[in-house]
Length: 286
Image (cartoon, rainbow, N blue to C red; front, top):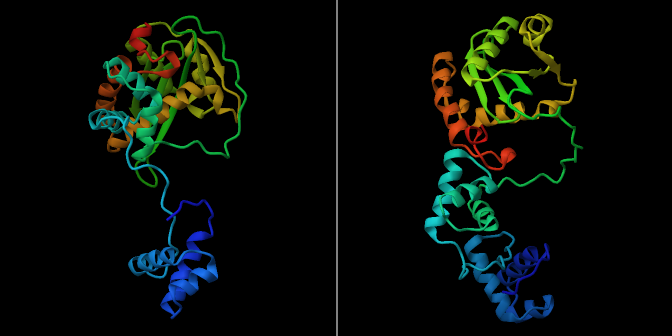
């Protein structure tokens, strides 16, 4: 049958088939609706298979293409997507590093074909960029935040996370309690583990980053604006990545989370490519 984009045609096909089932001839139905009688009979045969439902229009998309990617490359794209849940451009860069020649458009088409492409919502509004403090070296600006995880209706555990804006180097650790003393302990431990001095700490206005924390941190401190999560965009994005790629796969036990974090942070620092630093790893930036 001919291709059409008219949304009413499936209903017309259904009604045409019903006219034949009720006793009209295919020729009479065709003259009445303006279609050839052989087309009417095609619709009748389809209606016997699908029942009393609108007969959909077949897609005009070709079933194959002479320049379609080979199954080996497609499987590699899907393997990287399933393993690390990365987006098209990051997968394209990883394939490029593996000396696999493929275009970015082909990677995105493959992800779309297998249902892995996240479409951009047409309802999202544009938000103007807010300039950050000038960052010239490691430690110039370090953002810190807390992830809350529900253990039960009355109990939570907390994962403190921290990211260096210059190198995207990160650190995270789970605790059973959240307060200013825990925040201070976490920052000092992170500074020792990451091996460089934190010049400025930026946080939101959570109770764990209150006046006591600021007075004891002995570093420059900067609060993000209330109601402006984009001020802490780097750590907020890291929190989402951390939850999707690590925390969601671990049970709610502090010891198990911290064991998983050690392995994941090693991968994040030495293997995971980051778009914000030109598809390098934090260790390569350093």
